[in-house]
Image (cartoon, rainbow, N blue to C red; front, side, top):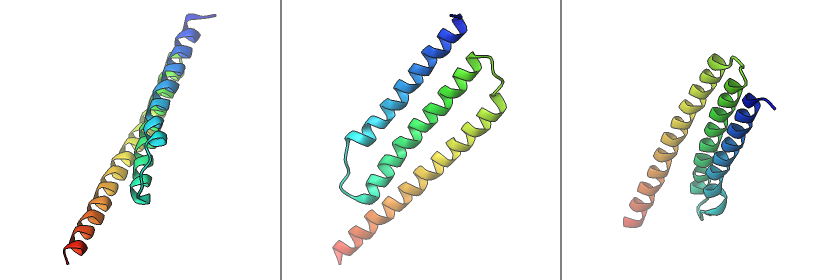
Length: 106
């Protein structure tokens, strides 16, 4: 077996391990509020997805495939959507908290 395939297999299994580690908090820690649960799961799903995409790009590069332009564009797009997801979630949860405080004080 070629050293290139061994390196690609090692990188593949490392990627699977790290992506699985990002799923553990989403699966093991439960949230009572459905809105918080949605953003909690989505946050960890995005991190797992980013890890999987970066790992897949690395495996293909190790195997000698020219994936730099496509994979980089895909990774930049997913990273930008992750930032938008987090910022929208932060704003929505903050607005929900402020609304709860205002209605309690009345």
